[in-house]
Amino acid sequence: MNDRPLLEVRGITKSFGSVQALTDVDFTATAGEVMALVGDNGAGKSTLIKCIAGIHGYDDGEIYFDGKPVHIHGPKDSAKLGIEIVYQDLALCDNLDVVQNMYLGREIHDWLFRLKESAMEQSTASTLKSLAVTTIRSIRQPVASLSGGQRQSVAVAKAVQWNSRLVILDEPTAGVDFELRMELWRYIRRLHSEGTTILLTTHYLEEAEELCDEIALIRGGHLIARDSADGLRRHYGAATLADVYLKAMSV
Image (cartoon, one colour):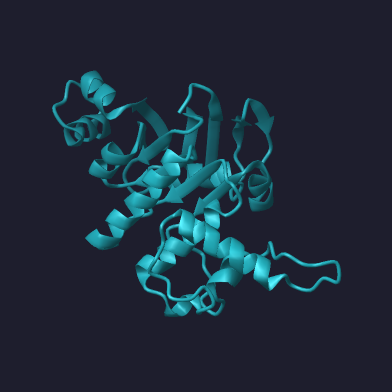
């Protein structure tokens, strides 16, 4: 990790009708770091990452990527910048196989516009291997036949397939069992070790502390604190991150 900002969010404000979802949110994600957005349901975490990914427009503010102002109007714009997002529902097509899901909308064709199946298979297998995914029997089996953990593996692999610079994970371990949670932690650590910048939303304080270089606390659409776990404990005079959270959210 270095000190160069990869993502800068400046004064992002977003409302849905009379509901103020985000208010003047500022934060910076340094290249190569893992950063957590932590807050209650409805705090604005998912809205913020969807603004970054171009799913939602925003009413005011600016987003800078790699030091330059960017205007992200949709997933294609974010993908061109090297931003990929893994949603909580994974957004996989059950009727397609692993390779087809990995390349959905980005298929490789030859000069006669025929699918280059072999190239896509090799790339898919290589990406899964890089994440140490070994439980998928065949990359040509339908995603519907995969276990929950295997589906998560495919979703993460799909996000990093394109040499992504920023991977956004929306509640990646919500509602999963302990074994799958540990497997996902392993994927995140591996990506981190390779220098990928990761922004994740989570409800789990121990997850944020275990995986993340910095933790940003969001309450009512406001980003109220951002620091390392140790820095947050010092700032709030708290012994544990749980105590930090209780103090921060009760102000």
